[in-house]
Figure 1 (cartoon, rainbow, N blue to C red):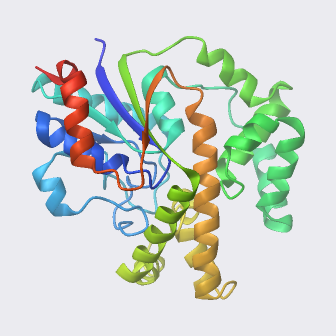
Figure 2 (figure 1 turned 135 degrees about the horizontal axis):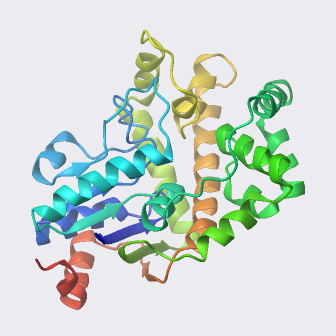
Length: 312
């Protein structure tokens, strides 16, 4: 059964969440979150989850589904997302897939790139290198053998850095070239992509304000509470934007001011990586937003132009 999906994509801080909610509210739709960190319970402030009140008004799926101590794979995400989408479509409600994790977006729309199986020896060696020399050492190593993948993968994303280098060692081919072969198959479902773009200065301003707000809302205390839990944080949770930097602050590596600045820098770098990833998707209807763009007005315009997409 082909699924009918509308993807709302854009860099972190672009306003895609607000647009997705407005579209869902006006059309009776439901939202599939496509964010690799919003899946974790109690990681709320740093992931900018919609409030419980908003989620009571507009159904959201794939949020708060696993413990922060658990690892969560792309395959698990796709399985749960497709199950939720089938249920939503059985209710004849539109499905809006909203978020900024490009790998999850790619896997849901086109299927999963499997690649060779894991090699524990290679992974242990690469992880030891990262612990000894820092994750940037792996990022530079990847840049030498696969600059395309290095551009896409954040230097702090240890799991994906290790996987890309592991694939190169096992196959002799860059993971980016193998993924390009996977790309040629096209989408598995009936997908529409709507993308939001902002001027880089505007996006940087919004990121700065977003980080300020997270600190004011209690991100440091949220991270303290997570670290105090009985089960240790998973690797993915510890590496999450905002959380990794605050953990280093709490461990004494950064002052709070330095941690906040690093969150801003790393978030801008992540946005750059997102822009690179988004070039790989099927045709996207890009909307260039002014600094004062209003999500409600934009939703009205889209429904006027493309409302038939979301009719029962």
